[in-house]
Image (cartoon, rainbow, N blue to C red; front, side, top):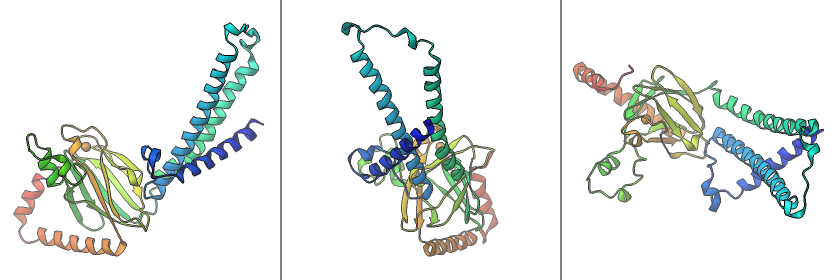
Length: 293
Ligand SMILES: [Cu+2]
């Protein structure tokens, strides 16, 4: 019987969250999570809104009853405590069962989304992401392409102590890199995320991806950007990792499939050529590169 009452409530809240989404990108919605550009980021957003409205409804009901009771049953009005409510088994059963049903109703969509977030099957491109103090290394495992991504020169110059450069004049201050991660649209990209020294966290909000980069462990994450959403997406290291934690942003350059294929081919050829002619400089370069402990 109670289930019959909860189901329409949950459905009603879902409809409300849909109506709220229609007002996105203005005013108060700027304070909210964004919908992102991947299927998973939208599902996370919708789950967040559903749970948010459940909490709002519970808040309204609980505080409504409390305020109504305080006003109508105050001592000044001659209210006499109802002693039959103390240890009333039926009341205690109801206020235990209703929250349990609400929790189960929330756990079902949450678990469904979590399972989908963890489903790294049928991926089309695998990139190993290594966080280090202070930057990221990207390895395209199937294509022999590998490079480092650091804070861009303009931000780095401006952030120096007594640099005399106004950060407001720097484009995307502290959110720009020299070499962004390049990926294609409409492709299930799998990331294998690890750390070379301490724990970092690869976080790009628009993709709904935030995964810890832990030395000695490989965490998996995936995303698939909408076909009509190529462009630059920005993120940051989301795990306090040391002195320059604030200076290791993430930029992802999402390109059309054709553009990406051309870039990958050109970069692979370039790197092959750079590695080929003389062995000693290549060895010297790799010796300076961070390695896993
Ligand atoms: Cu970090």
